[in-house]
Each structure stands twice: as structure tokens, then as C-alpha cells.
Length: 126
Image (cartoon, rainbow, N blue to C red; front, side, top):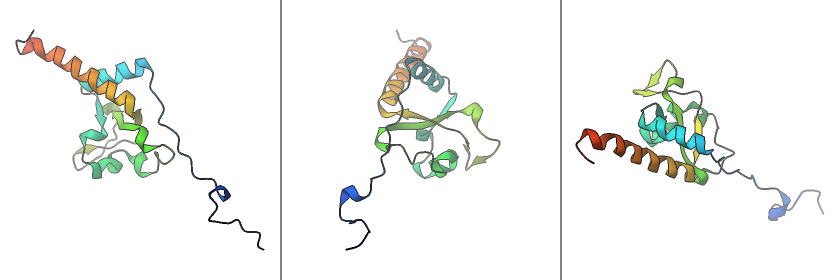
């Protein structure tokens, strides 16, 4: 008999529990949608997937390790927060914001609706 736990027993060692991406407030959703329409926000969708960890340095440094990635809609930051350097033409950020997948869907829908409302009259639409 040994003092070591049975590694075949799942209860012997607690699994690493990842937390859900935090939800945004209504005001944060509004501000983010407006920032997208105004071109003030850079998202992970604005660069190739292999560049995300170079653009958002906190991703490379493990900033998402404790978050369930299935609950992340996107990683983003305001362009005014970009560093002085860039990588392959993309801005580099030492900070980042994370949008919950459900919040991101709302943000995108609102940004599209707002952009269409702005462009319609310019193009002669209703």
C-alpha cells in the first residue's frame, strides 16, 4: 500500500476548472458596437488567426488560459491603445478586452444595423 493517490481515480486530482467569459453590460455592448462602426476598435477577426497572439500580446502570455474559450466571441481593443510598433502591418496591443460569444453576436448585429442605417441615405436608400 502506498501513500500516493490512484491516478486512475478522477477524484484524486481536481481538474482545472475554466471560468466563463464575463458578460458585458448593456452600455458596454452599445459602446462596443458604436466603436466598431466608427472604426475605433480592432478585433481578432481583423487579422489572420495565426497573428492573434502577436497582435494581442496578452493572448501569447496566457491571458485566456483560465477562460473557457467556447464562451469567447472575440478579443478586441480600442486602436488608441495600440503600441508604437506593429507586426506585419497589424497594430500590437499590450491590453485586450474579451467579449462573451452571446454579447459578440448582439454587438455584430447592432453594428451591421447601424452601419446600414448610416450608409442607406448616402447611397440613396430609404
